[in-house]
Image (tube, rainbow over all chains, first blue to last red):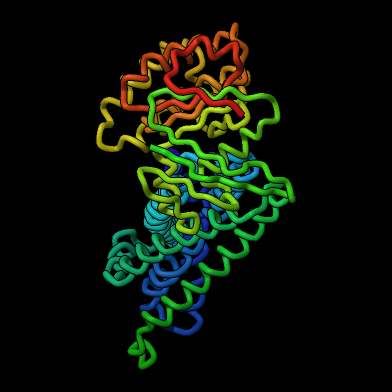
Amino acid sequence: MRQFYFTAVMATLFASILSIFLGAVTIFESLTFSSHFGVSEFVSRILVVIIIRELGPLFIALIIIGRSGTAIATELGNMKVNGEIDFLEDQGVDPIDFIVLPRVISVALATFSLAIYFSFIAVLGGVFVSHIVLSIPLSDLIHEVLNALYINDIIINMAKGILFGGTIAVVSAFNGLSIKRSSIYVPQATTKSVVEAIMICFLIDGIIAILTFDSSMLEI
Amino acid sequence: MISLKNITHIENDDKIFHNFSLHISHPLVFIECKHHAKKELFLDLILGKKKPTEGTIQSNNTSILYDHYKSLLAYRKHLAVFSEERVSLLSNLNAYENIIIFGEYFYKARQNNVYAEAMNYVRKCKVENLLTKLPYEMSHDEQCLVYFIMMLMKHPKVFIIDFEFSKLHLSTNIITGIITEKETQRCSFIIFGNSELRKEFHTKEEYSF
């Protein structure tokens, strides 16, 4: 619960500000792009694909890596240095069950929740900013976004949230636990966990993009 | 119960144990030992952290499986070791959380009893004022008492206590009182101590090394 609170609830404000900016920028750029090429009917679809399917979960993954991934790697690294992991093993407690698993579940759930929240706020932010700046009726914008949104987009967003969260926690915990018993290795483990988590999250994102690629879009 | 059969252990060409056997089946075994008696090595052997050069250590007639991590952990669950040198609390949890999380882990099925039992030991060990303190805010003696409660919450079948405290130390009296009370509760105690401390316990079996 403490891990979920730290990962999800305490990151909400930062995620909200970032999502509004992202939503606004994406819709502005999309409208500029569409007015140049005359494909304005695809603006809502582009917004949905970019924010809900791609950038929402990825931005949240980056936030979680920076906040919680580093915290997990440092915490577990320090526990290893202080002999707390050895202490647990001496008591017959499996550190994976006792320390890692609850963190993986909490971070996966937190990333899942934040990815949905981030995407919702980003789309809403984009819609509101468009309404204010470009004077497009709010009802038209909302209608267009809802029409452009498919169930697959929501499923992909959720799946990415869980996969990214679980990956971040596993990579960070693994790096934290695999250090030798000296404090000089803790910062190294933290840096390594950030780099590896980013790489694996982008790799997962790429794989999901290939697996869910809709070839019918090419015909349009 | 635990039995050590014909243990011989060599470290850095030093023969530390030679054909040493010990069968722990009594509720209370007192081992009187001198300084540098290699207690820590003995504890490591009993916990399965080190493999003896020769001989076997058995728990309920089953030898320790050193290469099987899960079996080793399952074996250690029934053991509790209290030694000043091994006192370790989880640094990001306060005293109460350390005690409760341990109780909850070992007694998943009886969670309601965990809180009452923990508070009972807290009162007996007189550590009520430490419950909200983090480990770094406690003295070593205070950490020892919290650690002792954590070990009690494991409900071990064998409880090994290495007494470093002097006879007059407050912790010794508290711990001695709890041991005497727990003796009747299917838990064997192996106590390491000096001759002065031996008089405190009515032991059925005594060793020295």
